[in-house]
Length: 498
Image (cartoon, rainbow, N blue to C red; front, top):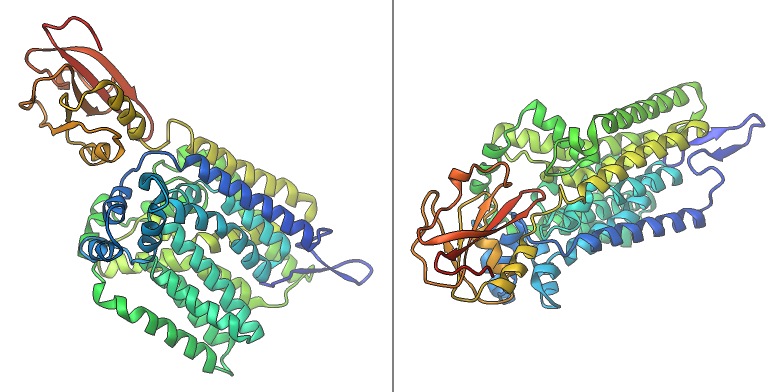
């Protein structure tokens, strides 16, 4: 598709159909506002408790020297390249590491918004660029990984930057753009392994575009490989087999996870976020855009300057899903929605391109409907029902009510509470791992607290801990993405409740 889609008016003059009456200043102002909104959204979520694989990041970077951190993340300790962890290690020195290790994701996640605008402007015009920036700014999937202490937002940022750089480099031939391409592509590869798929598309596209002058693209690609060679001995995939066990590659999972990247949420079905009506709105508007694009080009209403750009956008959007699916089919099954995040910038540009192709009389309605759907999905994603588990809130409560010698018994669960609570405590506590159906030997204390996964109404009373000599005096429910309960017990000889 064209970098600029031009429409011939009745008088024979041409105008930029994707930009309309808007000039660059208005577009930049809109993108600036979107970037600020994306940053504020991420800041509003950054103080949530650490969750899931973030615990690994914390354990690997929070209390190590730089050398110790590198030793901790070397496989099999970690299944991701080191760049994000270096950034997280540095930011953890600024303040509370449970918060500051998210700083690289927060900043680079928000910074992806203007980069996506530039990419969309270069490949499909100014209006498509603004729409694409808006799509990724409020995307609930991008918001989640833009506040997670894991490498995905860092990977997507550098993939987007390297794509802009290779587009500019092949068009201008300027050395600074080639240098930026090399550095940003290497950074993407050092951030996430699935970045290799869009990077391969970039390399192939540059060789095709520069097929009569191959020296610079070949040298650039060779430089990227050379920069990555030091990490090759550390590639390790054996532990990734657990991904296929938890979420095997099937047609259903593939379609669901691709939709999640565009408009969904990592820990909700697409029928919940963005809901079935939201999916229908998205599908209708995308199909309308595709039809308008095809009809406009065939009838001559849309004059395409660079047809290869449309295929480049499509190839970039498909690279990670196709690459991960092929790898999962012939080797270790690593299919997972988060591993597709390298495609998020291109997917936003592709959807922005389709929406920008809709005739101006209907475009506003279509863009409004899609953005309203995504904003609704984001509002739902940050609601208490889908927020990260309230480990930090529970830990602060225990800091207030439990003395250091009071036993806190954590029963095994998917949430790994035995690992996360000590991270969130501000005071020393006696934490004991319990076994289902048993009350472990515990030191005497004024209170004893048992922590059990689930909601009160979902957990049968017969499954609750029943310590001999203790009476249940309090129950606190923490809802959210993965609910859990705090059950407070006192010795039966003590009548008062703390």
